Image (cartoon, rainbow over the protein chains, first blue to last red):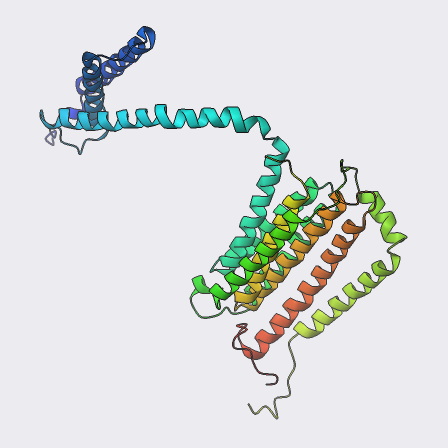
Length: 287
Length: 104
């Protein structure tokens, strides 16, 4: 019969109950002090602060005994730790009461009544688009670039829906996400990437120059977009556009429509011819 | 806070265009460059549809052009990626800084 190892005293029920009682006492004392503060309305006396410190220490002692068992708490370190925790909590409470609460109250009264839900939808789609495009531009792994491009395309489709263009939105999802992105992923998988490190498959060349060029382009375009007096209509319509688009394609834009189909056929045949493997003559292959 | 209007969409299109320019200019991977071209085409499309919605909603010229752009982007992606594959078969790399020979 094997000897029973001595039980850890911290696993007994009495120990757990004792620490739980300490936590409960601290909680009740703190709650009582807070209730006194709220009900009476005037500042806390020194005894109130002392009671809060005592409550924090008791709660922390019980908590540490139950969950932070590596922490050895003696009769001296327990009040010190309690005081430290109390100080941190008091600072956080001061911050929440004096800084954060007026800030959120200001936001709630001044900004929120002017925010429409449709605006939030627009900003969500715009942020998704720009974040996806930024991931495409700056990611160092080309697989991550391709997946970021997925988010950019879906964000643009959301912007189309926001503009009442239902057919372009569906075409965007079907053709860009379902076709072009899959083609790009195929091309990534079929070609050996630059270098041997799989995390550096998409290295940059002269990134500062490119960033300066992009910053100049976005500054010029945004200045133009914001400052120009656009002749916009007052109430844009949100009618479905699939039917009128079909009519426009078959009446007013019939010739470009047919030419587009010829272009698609030519692209199909041309890409097959370009991408097929060449059958070389092996007799005169002298590099 | 002003409500959403035409300049908001133009700003999004400008950001997309600039990021596409950055991608095209700085990438060394040919597939990455094609991704940048797609971003630029999407920026143009956002502007087309936004102008159609806010300036001339009675006619659908902008949406028709956006559909044409999508069609041509599909053709461009197919031919471009085929060219990338041909370059890879010839040079065994798609680093555009190293593919600098006109003939084998």
